[in-house]
Length: 616
Ligand SMILES: Nc1nc2c(ncn2[C@@H]2O[C@H](COP(=O)(O)OP(=O)(O)OP(=O)(O)O)[C@@H](O)[C@H]2O)c(=O)[nH]1
Ligand SMILES: [Mg+2]
Image (cartoon, rainbow, N blue to C red; front, side):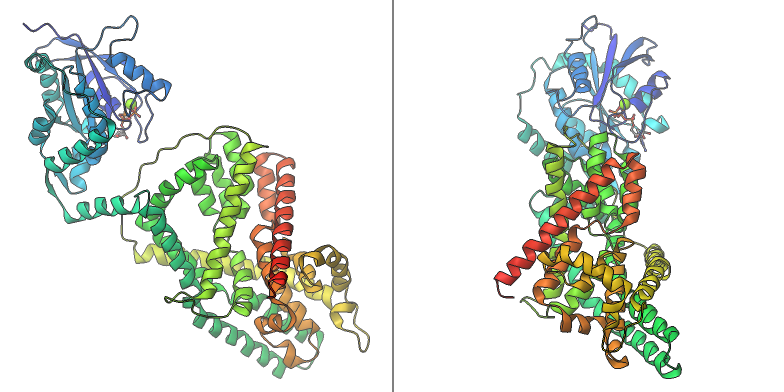
């Protein structure tokens, strides 16, 4: 005998479309949205069966299993099992599956079906699956699961009548099946989910198959991180190998201009300002445009193809390990371009301590302003040698500097989360975008924007600071036999600071460059170039490229210490200003300045003394 059906409940993984189906079946207006975890409590409404009988339909929060891990999942479990006080156990369970994500959703579905309760499966979002080139066979699925399967598109009201009819008949099926199915463990369910999905696929375009295979490899917990590391490695190799001819050409162009000015103009302070200040100083930064463009070319390609989101997915576990949520990944990622947009992007992090930690470590991500600093030192001091297997030493060192920054950030996060920003890490679930080939137009536009940002900085902030420095370097004028830099205001000021940085292997010229570099890190390069151009005894010497000057004047330990310094030093006033705005006060930016300078000092010192001890 069949008893009348009075209640039914919608269950399934988060974001399967349960609430959308609930609204379509009952005419209610539950909130639906394209991210998991929208429904957090049970909601009930009335739907009509084809026979005209009313049934109370319950919309439940999404759940990954019957073992509850969060309060909203506990609601689901209690309602399904009839443990909810004052509420009857639902007569029929409607399991909602996302057809475009079938394998993942089948794991929980099996667990629900194993309860032996009357179940109807709504194979929802078939429109999305078909758009992606995946056609499923509901019959095969029904056979494998042992329950009726109805294809639906909740948002287009497709399959609703069939679903209601199946609910009306569900009790009958249930009576044919008196024994609950054997209870499987989670790994077996996963295996079975894979097999069932494979069996239910009618046709799958080559593209869809390719995409799911790609994900299986790229998101594999072992292969994924190795591939990510390998890719980044290739990027940094390319930055050096690819940019060198262009950078050399630019450098030659700047030298040519400089020679031209010297030949055409009679010696004067104005001529010196042009050659020593603007061409040497600003020119020494501009020559790194090719490196910047190559780096951003790779970043843009990774973003456009959908790989970057997968990298975030892979990093999520690492981030959780140091007490950060995966939500920090995107702000940290944008900090590789510049910490300013990175710090602003932390607004999307709800937890205040998560957010503060992310702000505090954002400056440790290697921003593009550091690239000229790294590149000039590496080009001058690291031999352009092959360390085997086609791997260039220069690219390797650059890669190492980026990794050191990331490692420093992770260690800092760990320390901060245990002290000043104590708290628990929050979870993070992300939908992965589809793979796509990047379009040439978007790439070109992205690169153009980066080039423009870089050149604008060179033309404004770097130009201004370099000119001011040039003035400070040229006055008062040196008397006979005295070096101009020694005599100048800037030289005098730098002598004071030099005392502080001497223990970490820095010379007076570095001390001199560090102050204006607070305006922007690239200014360190233009300052050194200008200083050496001013200090050179004759025109020929002053026209020498910065790399040659460095090689002649610095030791290798000093150069390495300088690199270590720039991995950590908060050499950017705009970043400090943004941190002040975003944290509403000076307390945290002050803290940031202090801890980053301390780190930079220690790192440079350790590098210098280790290098000296090693006899480098
Ligand atoms: N294209 C398409 N989109 C759908 C379909 N069903 C639902 N959606 C969309 O999928 C998203 C998730 O739907 P919800 O109804 O909020 O999902 P839910 O299962 O209730 O999610 P939680 O409450 O988080 O467990 C929304 O953006 C819906 O508009 C469908 O059949 N086709
Ligand atoms: Mg919902």
